Image 1 (spheres, rainbow, N blue to C red):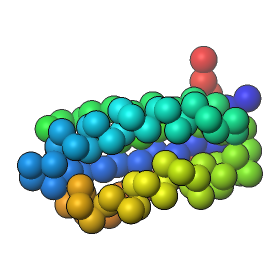
Image 2: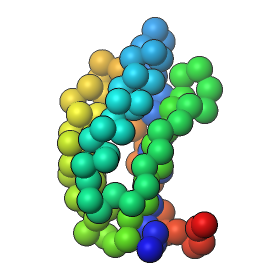
Image 3: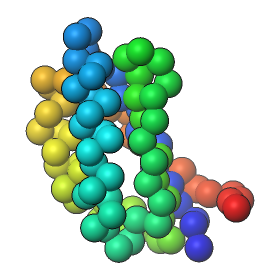
Image 4: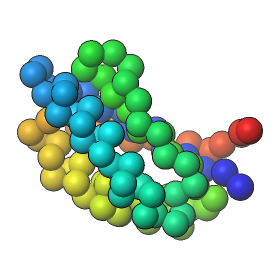
Length: 97
């Protein structure tokens, strides 16, 4: 059951929009390997704003994801790709379908 979530907003540096989009599109391969990540979405809000939304059954799964390969790769590339630090928000899921 989806009980917890993460919402991550990413602001691409000017000229790095395509790189950010490619990075988060490709991260689905890593997300598929995470047993405790129930759903994982990447999305584009506008030309330089992107995001990731994922859901988890419990805090253990959410923390595993926050310490996993996607987060590590994101933080390793953040200074090259992003104009500001990623905004990571922990959420409680109230309802889902």
